[in-house]
Image (tube, rainbow, N blue to C red; front, side, top):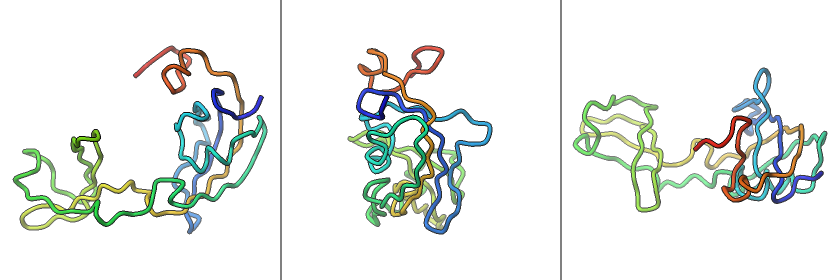
Length: 161
């Protein structure tokens, strides 16, 4: 069976950045991740690289920012006044806050605390980075009709949202 639209792919991976720093590692001790191929459950560049592969396939895949989490957008960095922040919110660099927009909820990170407010960054933490995935396909199976209808994998214990 091949990694193609409508199949569930199970894989282990090690994600590193250009400097070789490990960002994520699905091993040791963790179960492999599963995703529904062809439904946008993983970044586009990795999904394209895995298209047509089979169980046992191993590869190192480099993915440019535009095929991963996008380019870093300076327009996504802005300052807000303390009066626009939730009451009692800790004002510390690294704190994540969520904001509702017409397009849905976005996550913002406090990057600087100023006298009258904070600087927020709405870029994904991996935006602008070239990523390297060392992947191993652990298994591939046909998705269930319910998984296809919902566009994502359901766990061994049924359906959870």
